[in-house]
Image (cartoon, rainbow over all chains, first blue to last red; front, side, top):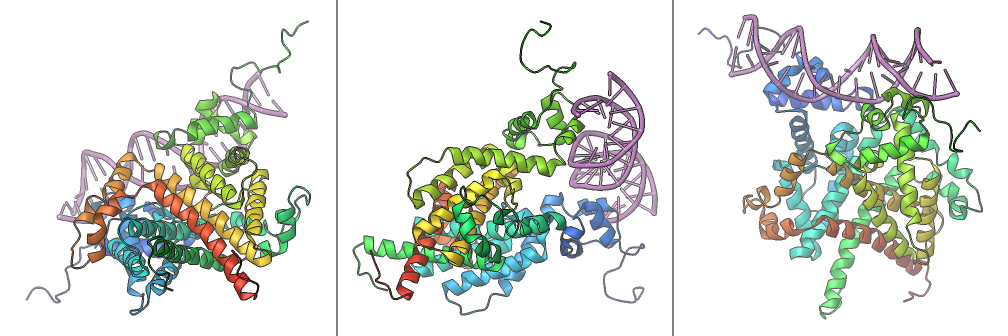
Length: 238
Length: 238
DNA sequence: ACCTGAACACCGTTCAAGT
DNA sequence: ACCTGAACACCGTTCAAGT
């Protein structure tokens, strides 16, 4: 037997056995460094110990690579959603999981905020959200619109938070400080509401805001179901 | 009289009288071209008939220029909101106006989705939204959180739509077609909800989705006010 | 069949030199 | 005081050449 092992033969130079999976995993390692390390093709080559342009053997361009990376992270989110939750619980778990991975891999979350991956795990997300809005009591065109409302909103939320992490730490610090600096010093006559609430505005946390945004989607679905029930003359129920 | 006119003296070379306002207006002209014409410093120099680097005499960097451009467009949105609207009408007018300018100047709307301009017109927006949630019946920390929910959500929505317009037309076409192609061909056993609603999913319009998202914010505020009223033992009202 | 590396056509920004 | 233009340190991507 000429081959001493049944693992795949490796090429002569170390680190030159590129596969789509290896490239995706290297991408995730770079993406996890956030604003400290730009996600560039050249950096990816470094991380892989290969020439940067070798990536183009496995992905058409950077965009296609990012879509594949995004679909991978989406799969991890879906796999972590527990069984047996009701529709609200499933939407909350999807929202929390999506935010978590978007903050862990900001460049991925940010790039995908306005995209469709059209890859396997995206179909699973669509199926999940559609199932939730139908379990809530919507169907047909109503279910379709409310699915898009939830799907696009979640993407926009986590994309916004992720994009923020990609700014220079200095820029972020200035943005955050504005609530306790610039907004405290506004003209009280011209801006009475800001003046009145300046303390509370500085105390709001990102998590509170995210929670409110997710609950707003759930409330909107519940209210829509309720409105349709009343409008159809059926008993108001609960 | 040596000067034939009382307009400001122009320098020797044509087009070299740069001012912050002239640069902002040239930026808006380029931004209005969307994905057809990238918003770069070199293009801006071309548009102004000046050397690209002359811009750095008037703005620290491209980011500061974009913040100023964004504040300008925000001012136009605010000036177009009619007087005498109730809180829901004001929020709807703000949402519609913001979407309109974001779609007109995609690079501006997209860049600002996760930023704070800390410029005059942003203060006016904060004051407007705070006034709306207070008129709805919230105050203190509740008003602050719900202001942030509305403000961040509107930015995220319009930023998402604007960013989408910056993709190549080919990419956009593929994304849009997916609802009538890939999503119609999914496995019916594995994805029963998608299969059931594939027709309706393809028919949803961006405007319907935007409407649903804005109304969700309004509904969430109303419900929060209602919940607090009941919780405090006051009469349920309405 | 896959990887390499020079090269191309771009970016934002700096800085010495002009006027 | 302001503008110019060469230059720097980057980008994503292509393609002929290697193995």
